[in-house]
Length: 171
Image (cartoon, rainbow, N blue to C red; front, side):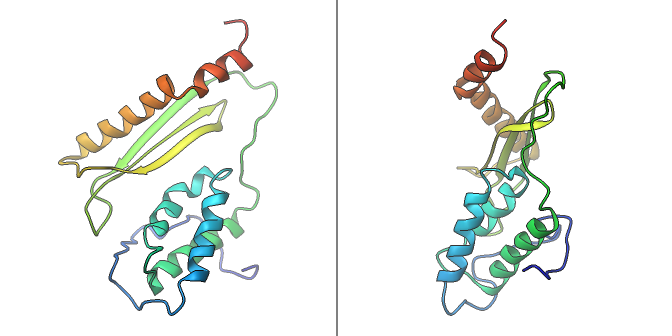
């Protein structure tokens, strides 16, 4: 993969993977191993969480388009080896949260993917990408559920209390 084609995003913007589209891979084990390694990498690479979550849905019966999408994630990683979690000293403490959702992004079951990320002084400290349990009826509903998921993590996640006491003992 060292000589792979450079790309600026982990997925093609127009990608729509389907469960039954494309030729079935003769041996699914290499695909499963690749996706498992990518899942492990999401611990320090929040920029690939959505893409890895998408290709992980097809581990039971992977097909050629699924493998091509996973390989593109590898190309992206190879193009962005200097990306990661960076915490700088001396930067003012600013806690921010972001939430987003795609409306019926999964082509097989029409469920949305919800996601959030919390940053402290521009460094990611918590993130999640999760497939919604039920189909959203509108963009607003999907976005509201993503925001609600982020709020639950902030209030009930436990990390926020530990984080504030660890890094801001004067509060």
